Amino acid sequence: MNFNSSLVDGTEIDATQRLRVAASLFHLCIEHQQAVHTLVNHGLFGSAFALLRPQFEAYVRGIWYHRCATEPNIDAFIRGSEPPKIGEMLTSIETLPDFDSQSLIATKKAVWKALNEFTHGGAVQVKSRMNSSEIILNYKEEHTVGMLRWSVILSLLASTGISSLAKRDLLANQLFDEFRSIYAEDLLPFPTR
Image (cartoon, rainbow, N blue to C red; front, side, top):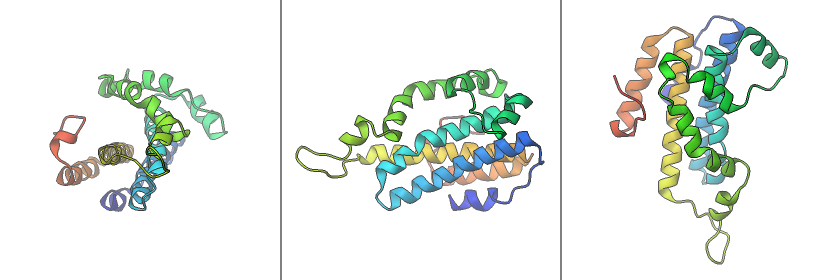
């Protein structure tokens, strides 16, 4: 998290509306990961889990506004209009050559219901706060570890998105190298170089 911030914060990009919107959304995704990490460190697991959906959405929106949106889409967003639904954005994104594996759509299908439950106070949040007779945090360690890893991966992807906007391949390589030094290779949901 700290290494990522030290490399990404202050990165300069061209000041086009498209790049500014995309960079801001990628940066929001990174900030959500920092908040997830901080919340977990303070034992606020439910709030940390609740940030996964907005973090995923910030990443997807960043890609869509960078690579798929029309200029009128960008202008409308800046004026306050809602972006398309996430499914529509993912469909557009996954027509791009480097996203055509359908992994983002598959990820959404696999986790969307749980993300909504965590974000909107659904049954998953309720069950994670009770045992048979008392209110008590009851989050399983493997779920918390999985949440932290997924959040870090989203942050890494957003950081490499920023490096792409800034045309700084070295930055992306530094981020991947640091990620690999912390996490085992088998945790990566994408091929390594």
